[in-house]
Amino acid sequence: MEARETPAAETHETPASGQAAPPVAGHAPAPPTLGRIAFTSTRDGNAEIYVMNGDGSNLRRLTRNGASDEDPFWSPDGRALAFTSTRDASLDVYTMAADGSHVRRLTRTDGDEHSPAWSPDRTSIAFATDRDDGDWEVYVMGADGTNPRNLTQHRGWDDSPSWSPDGTRIVFVSRRDGAAQIYVMGADGSNPARLTHDDHEHALGANAWSPDGKRIVYVADVDGQAEICVMAADGTNATQLTHGNARSATIEVSAGWSQDGASIVFVSSREGDSDIFVMRADGSEMRNLTFHAGDDYAPAWGR
Image 1 (cartoon, rainbow, N blue to C red):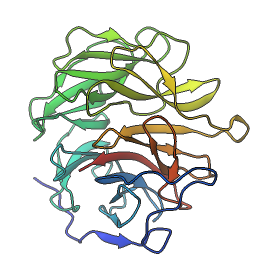
Image 2: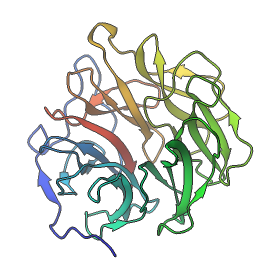
Image 3: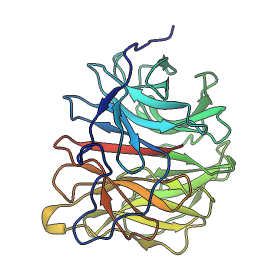
Image 4: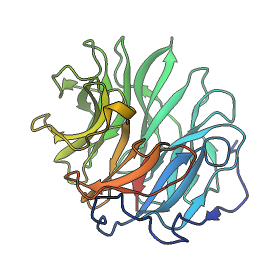
């Protein structure tokens, strides 16, 4: 049976009276951005899902629930969102229309699920779950919740799946070889291969393929700082894009791409609370979009 939320999406003013958020001091304004960014925020008391334009304008609240609603992820056509919620006790995967209506529960297990990711053809959703004796694995299921399958089947921690644009591969994080590293496998779980080979932990946020499939953005623990990095899809040419302030314990997490691949959205605590930032794909022209006392996190950029 579907669980439904009937109220219409609530509209909020952005920090600059409904206009795009101003740039971070010392940085040039970011270029015009496209599409919509869904994210989680605690600004109204508990974790709820919001959506705004790619420049931070037209902020709207999509969920209204006493439980936690988190981890939004757009369907490829921008008409729906997958997300996770504790509204039915355990942390499960749900979907809803882009306006917050037609909420539907997809998973029903005693375990927890998170990090849902829609396949490019919209037929499947990958996610992480500990339903197998508390061991976190990457699963895939039909977009309607049917036919769940364990893709990783490995003792150890496997998490944060992200599909390649052509739908043939999934990148994920795993501790199967000790420290959390980034791996890639076929969409059916075949041929897992390690992409990162360093001493950094890569378990601090989502990773994502660029729209052209040539690059992967990810989060690495660099000298005790969570930083946004990018590498070629084969694991080469790793480049650190952010440089947080170690003295203030700045954290940069949860990175994703704009639809045109020109910009990256991520979460940063560099201004105190966790806020949603965007920057160019080379790390320049950084900009805070949310400017709010609550914590804003888990951004997903869609159409």
